[in-house]
Length: 455
Image 1: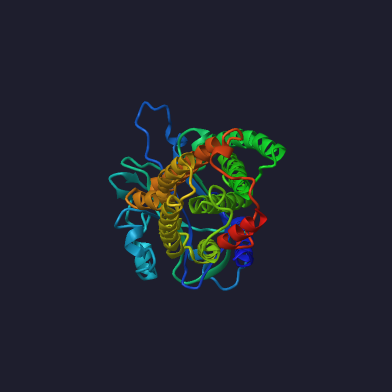
Image 2: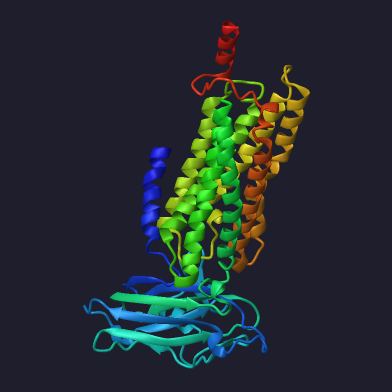
């Protein structure tokens, strides 16, 4: 699974370099209708908020003709749509694509000829934006100021002529109203830089203390593979938020960020999550507490392999098949749904394994109490992602991403903090037989027989 995951991971990182809020790209369309980008604008603040109209939300576009060819470049128009039912949703459906002919789509644009206002909540320009390239083959569209009065809205931008064109390079810039730390972000992404700052501070402190804990483990020769799994998980999580911090705060000032850092942040978060999952499943089996071997090793690593395969398909979908015009959340995709199903299966495995371990005759009362706390205290963590994603399905699209990100990060931080307390060097020996041999290579029964022979 690791060998399968690596090519997709590398491809994902490379493709992510071209993705940014200030979009840059090369457009072509045989049909003459090319999607350019989308952005979620905030609603206009009431009078007295200290904002002038020019402090509000706006967008602008810069087009450059790279290849003259035989395209109908004098008839190109920049068309604007929003998420009102009679606008973008009337011409596009998630999973199906466009549902109208090109000319019908053009007629539904908010700035189509003869339509001067999109609705009672949105004021729009009076004319379509027809592209007129200058002698240098450039065209810059004036700022469009967007004023929403009811709620945040997604806006969609299209370059069209319904005759076909190619070789048009574009640069798009979207800005929201508000303070500098929010302006470059759509409403659906506002707060990600704050989330990264909070959790980077938390995990930085925890990582420094954990490095000291590792030194104590080594001094006492108790740095068991189980403890090493926890170390990998917590340090990978810290690096994940460091990458997220670098990307989101660079994005705050540039509108582009560091997309490779964003991709690495996601990969490190997944690595941390899978490592913590393995830690919990091994503890539930009693490895390191009452056993020195691993039961059902093939099935256990098969489950982890299933997770890796689903994450590979999720990355592949995100790179190759995700529709940029869609507001579909990552875990609402088919691979994402399978990951949530595997989370539920892992939870059932965890509970059944813990129940079986609690029936061991040689289990001390203190370890029995510990395993009961682990069994029932960490079920919430294993089920947290399915519950969070299910809850997010009922939320508005412009709050879904930040809600899932903040709740997922919070539950993971609580899970790490609980284990941090349990695995403190002066406390860890109460619950774990951490001086036992590392027998990843054999089954539990074989290891126990070998131990009896040595005795």
